[in-house]
Length: 152
Image 1 (cartoon, rainbow, N blue to C red):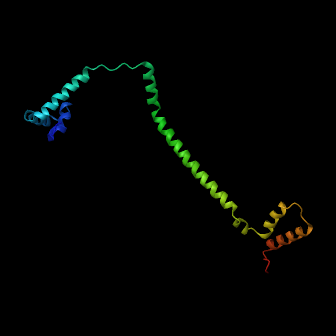
Image 2 (cartoon, rainbow, N blue to C red):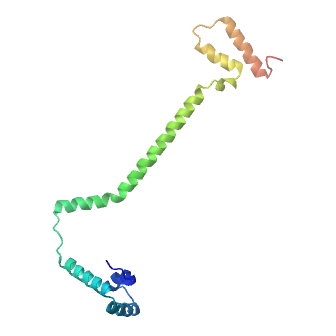
Image 3 (cartoon, one colour):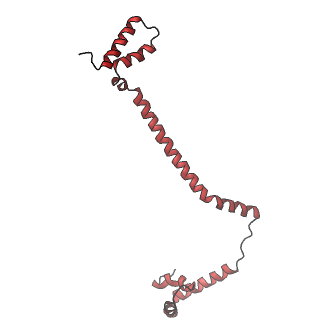
């Protein structure tokens, strides 16, 4: 392990990424620092070994499978995003439906209706209607439409 402060510049020097001034400065350092010189030698040997290595032969079927997987990568992210957004939308819809169902169960909805409308709905649901209830319903309708309340 190289503990020299200049060790972080070794790869830039090895790869030829230094300006000529920095390169000359670092070469002077290499002449004085055996740790950096040894590390540079190790990097050069490793580069030579990697350059001499032959790539492994990949079967055509495996290579085709790899290409298909790489081609699908952009659409996979979009698909996952769409699935997540669909789940969020479904959850919001479910919460809204539950809220509306609870709200429609409340008896407060009929409190704002005129008396004759409430009675008309009740009359439609009744199995048999008598003549007196029709007269009563008609009188409530007349009262409501004339703007008078029961207490006038």
